[in-house]
Image (cartoon, rainbow over all chains, first blue to last red; front, side, top):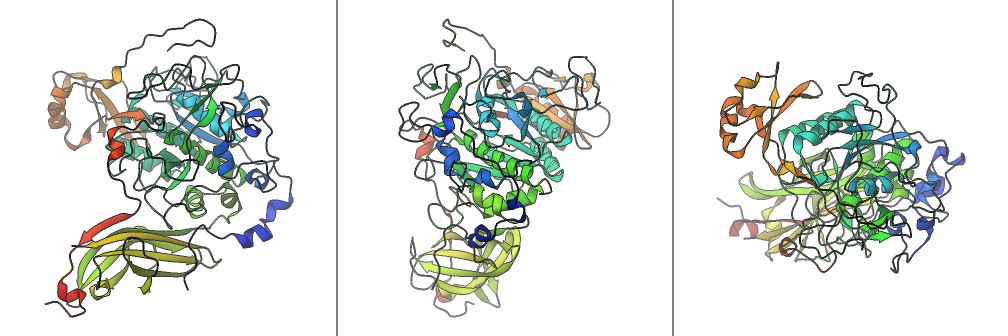
Length: 474
Length: 123
């Protein structure tokens, strides 16, 4: 009998707990908007997105797995800048370049940039990356909204230090070369995580070069999938294997229709999300095709809060989690963080890794509990017909790997949504996305024209992950 | 931008210069002198590093792109315009792209020989 293949099983870890769990741990925040609901007459919690991924007030809150003396982590926010006067942004949560003196007109640290104390504005070529758009400040709040402001929201990582890299102008536009410079700056100046809620069609070589460089320096790069409702193929660095590409899910844990699909890594809530409003901004004004009344998204008596939807705001939930994992255990590598976030995500929709939500919705609790070398990966990238010993076979390429692999097998099922599956052999272990997992004899596909192939990967701890692929016989 | 939060409208007039085309090239040594720029373009004043690789952006117009390409060959690329991931549209307001088919699972159509599917070796 095949076991239900939904989310991974972490019973053993929950029972035992990690070794450091006996020490002093964080208590969840009690900020006004974190505990309230209905602030704009909606029927769900104001910060429902954080609650959904495990950052809540319950005894099982993911924050209770984080050491109180966790370490600061630099998170590069490559966006429209920051309103650093917002009362819900604590100066402590803004990165300070330790080798640079403010406003002395000298490149003290000789990194090529003068007075870059908190970051850089790559447009104005100065070091005052103020946010005239609001997009960047909104993202900053999700990652590092200060817990000290009891009338405000709570960000995911109180240990985050935001490196403010303004590389998007006030119209939301930029060029690949600006993004590339910002990514390289982040990698060269100590960022462990980059949030990039920016992109477009096509991949400039200079941008890919920057991603390759930052990845080689150990940076976790989190990219929004985009809001065009189209396939990610050829859509910038989103979909690259060196980044975490994040899709948006809604209240029912379903993919939201605007969220781009394809080589998605994981998903996170991104519908009607509450965060900070930068002074004198209304970022949804002027959006093509949208009937929006100025000020309609403001929240709060002081109008310093804002609500909006988009993959832009799902990505920082993943960036926030990644940075919190590193705060808790600075020895984690970028590959380990990426593997854990994917491997512990909660599967939604059609069982298995898919193009809408990737490995599923991120699960902060499971990610923070996972051993540092944990991974359980499954995927089918493509199939092809090959001749083998004079016979036709269907070759399946993809991923089937775990740090402690118990088994990996290939199965086929008839029809559009098979309810029974036939094993057709063991799958070869391989972490690369194009590993030959196995060859299925053509004779296995008799009796129907529509099939699904799946790879089922089982970890020694009992966790299971699968991925499916639809096959039509022409 | 209009801000009514402070009780009075506040306007800012801006010009979006990034809709124009540009280029970027990887250079291996010193920056090429300005006079080497193709007609209609100019070499930007700065270079930037990605690790030990050096790049320089070029301001240009679309009609001189071919000239850039012939001058710099594979080292030249269009400096693509990127956009912030705009807030998603309100539910019920869906541009035409949202009507394009999407697929939760990857899929393919393949041809298998009839004899192969019946279990006999194909020749």
